[in-house]
Image (cartoon, rainbow, N blue to C red):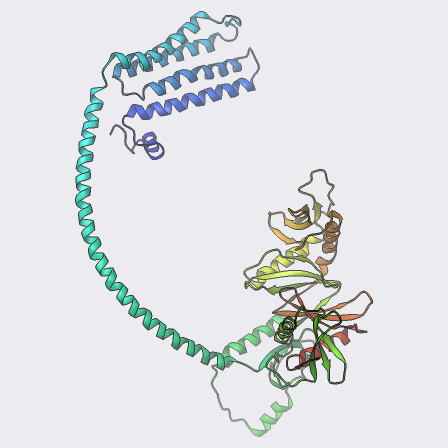
Length: 560
């Protein structure tokens, strides 16, 4: 080959364009490209300079150099005799000489009307020589003999390479046949291994069932503050008995949780050590058993999960209302209605499914105080963590707009909204003439109000790094409604409390009539049940929730 990969230009030409037949083919390509760049540079200089100046003359010169190099690049790519190639180079040199002469006389020695005949003649002779080298010389001479010799040698080498490749292909086919037989044997071994694996899976499933039965508990840990204000934990059986307690107060809730998790990790496999203690010492220890645990009606205390049907002092009533929609209500044995479905269902089966969800989630649901709005962090059906900002009227006025890989990431997104929503300005990215609402300048995010494809108005909170950290979650009928929603988010988000909810959470809030109510909201946003009536104080609403949590899991269902 006339070129190889050791030459940078030839290597790039080979990788990007193809295998060159001669070195001149590669050189001609680069000369052609060089001429094009000279022409573009000349045009750029011409546009950026004033007339009758030296700089303008440089622009003319660069533009004048373009044709010789472009022509030379095209000519030397032909398989010419060396005479033709040299004649092309000579013509280019003469044209360059004419351009240099032009630069020396311009602008003072250059006639605007006719130019300088001598300069033009020299430049034209150079172009003529290049043209003769590319058109006349190939017609008057035979092709380059060396090229034919080179191509013949290359053809012979290619034939030899093909023969060697054929031999290698035959050997490869033999190896492939051997490999196929080995693969068939491996498949048989794999079938036997899969059978063994299936048997192992069955054994593992049985073992997991045993472990699950060992780990199944009829008790639940409660985290609370004692009379001295120190966080503690206790393990309460579903029958109400406390079967274990921390025995000491912790300096923070996080420390109490660490102690709780340590008990969880170590209690299952712990051995039994019998310690012989003197009677007097044992009595002293028994007298010093720490402060009495506080009542579990504290909204920060989890209520034991009683989904397996403990005794209940209430009954669910399933009935059809005047509009032929199915509803349910939880009636205490004393006749009071302590909760209802809050909405009607199209069929009895739908009402029963909603009631089943209520039974599944009511005992484990935590409290969230909404005054006037609060954040909920929850895990969605795709096992991703999200947050939403809930108003006391039940509307979701903002949500994360995306799922997070962990609860801590969702909490970080929530905290970012808290810190930036209050001072964020409002922009209209789809309308340059719309007036924005300026924030206080301390926020690292901006509200954007826009109209979606369906003609509904929406908003999103965009951080300075480009991430969307919150959105409206719904469309609004008008621009003013969307901007009003932005104002509510900016007003409520910074001070809203937050709860890391599980499958569902109780929301305790004050309604428009200054009465306290509760509702049980599923993690998908649906309200599973509500109080059905208002209470005079928040403590009364909390007490009502406590009654529902205690009675709903085991309550029987009757149809009316």
